[in-house]
Length: 195
Ligand code: GRF
Image (cartoon, rainbow, N blue to C red; front, side, top):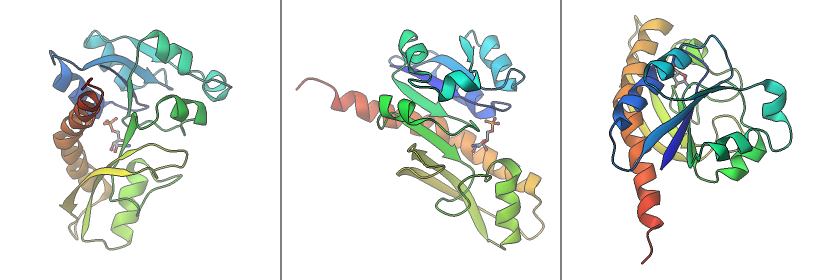
């Protein structure tokens, strides 16, 4: 079972996912895709010996978009880990219930367009929330909207800055995301077994 990770940033989650599935008996990270040539995630993938692809905007949003590339690489499942472009319908239709995202807050609050990176944590702090967390969810055609798979929470302290909260949230992501990916995929593999 082959995973593609899509990421636009430093790729700390991607790194944890790659490490988690290293030597896994039935699941492998087969591709790392980015829309940004300078994204740290690409260096991490290269260091781990995983093929990488850089997406061009026109190609991604046109017609069948990126599906042929993924088919060529035999991709069964897509993980968005800090990927900042909205995924086009062609890709969502090609991977029904086989694409998941992680969001650094407790959806349905603090999601949607513009709610990424430290903007999310600024909004959580400005609203005086006592708790934040992570949401792992299926991807549909709206930002941060598909069915929730998993949430975990952490406290927000009065002295928190977006940076201190981001660090706490990142730790939570690293702790849970790889294992949640594994359990979602394994449940699909079990369902696909001939009876
Ligand atoms: C994570 O906080 C994730 O929730 C968000 O983007 C961030 C990516 O961080 N969608 P990294 O590149 O994995 O360090």
